[in-house]
Length: 520
Image 1 (cartoon, helix red, strand yellow):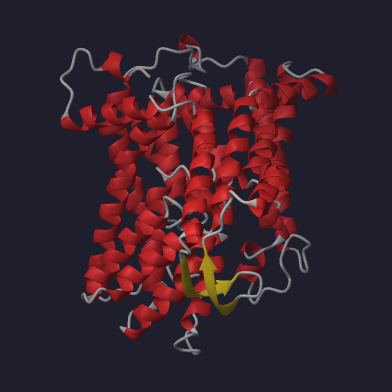
Image 2 (image 1 turned 180 degrees about the vertical axis):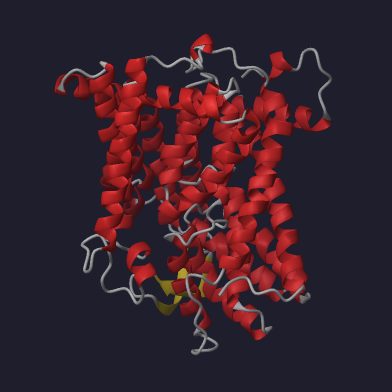
């Protein structure tokens, strides 16, 4: 990191000193691969202790396979017995290959890799820099991160590495670009101008939980829409201010190689201009063709069993399920067109070579993903995350406090639980049956409770090692700082996480106090 160098001539603020402490302390931990391996051992030991103590919780929970309520007694399961050892041995490969971000990242990188190595991204960024004021680039990256979540997890894979390249093109530190994009992408799960894949999923779980008390309650995927639109503005402003006032000054000047080549910034050769125009036209034609396919009657890209046109696109549709390979193709084809015209890709052998080069850079990620996937799987198998979630919910439910303090307590409990359970839908399947009926008894709209849940979930995703893409963020960061580790990511994202959590919660409190509906 360049933070210590950049601050030599300036007196550090208390916040910068604290973040330096977090970074140094975090990076003194073992290598992330070793650390996740140690966490696997810790989970195994804790599971054995809790299982021996007979720790269990009984709760009403949504069965995600049937979407029906079930009363279940959930016991701590030991990894240090015959069944546990059998599980670890038999599932080591499937834990890895079934790790949610693995295929997403690798397929996405096939498209991005050739876009970068062919020169298409570099040329495109030079053009963008020549026509876009530097003062707009930070809010643009944060805003694009927010909006990317209408495409599910694509923002993590596509926009975060692009954020680094965009910032480099403007002479900014690439880690600041990663931080800004990551803040936008994570915040986007609860802030957007459009409905995404997470909205119908959460609404379905909320409805099932609400029917415990009132079978007539039915919220739609647009139940949080008004609040999400306002949150888009809030997160864009906060993300921009934190990036420019806290993160960039702390990181200082980037001393590595930049993508634009300095003096070459404004000057594209005729061949580059011709290649970029052809590639851009190819991209536009592909997008138009994709939209036409989606809009066709009985399109194979839509879920024809959905109850509305919007849901047929976003709710378990072939389009959304296959979005990552679609996005990869949207990068891949224009990049090959660019390379052929610019002379950087001469034949199909060079295309394969560029793809191999992109994959070769993912070796570190594969190692980290293997141990991270085992840790997350062990945590799920032992039921430790579920026990923590239900215990925290029970504590809050038993508290005799008013509506606003109860909502604040719910946000804080969820934020802490999110550090131990990464999946938003899995966590809500456990928490919704507890909290939705509890708040319904107090005449609080389930849509408000769902909004509070999403605020907490999005805010602490930024600092949770159990978040599915945390390992990937570390690898992207190490491209520009070989010594980067968990401490680097945590120190960069902690200001965003805490600021988002506090400001967003205050906004919800004001919103609810004024009686403004959170959505349709």
